[in-house]
Length: 71
Image (cartoon, rainbow, N blue to C red; front, top):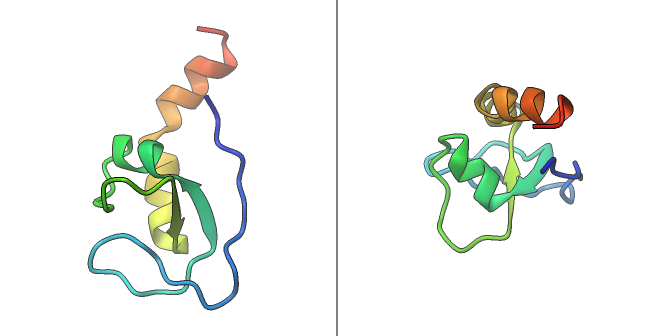
């Protein structure tokens, strides 16, 4: 299921382990882990910086394509 994209508050940091850049998007924690991003377990929403959001999009591309085809 597609995530609703939301913007985090200004000044929030990226929640990927080892990254401290300013967050630009917020996605579900479960889908971020499925995309291969090293984020903390148990978080419902995860803030991502621009670079990690790009990785997230690449990691979930096949799922989004299949979903748009109705599979």
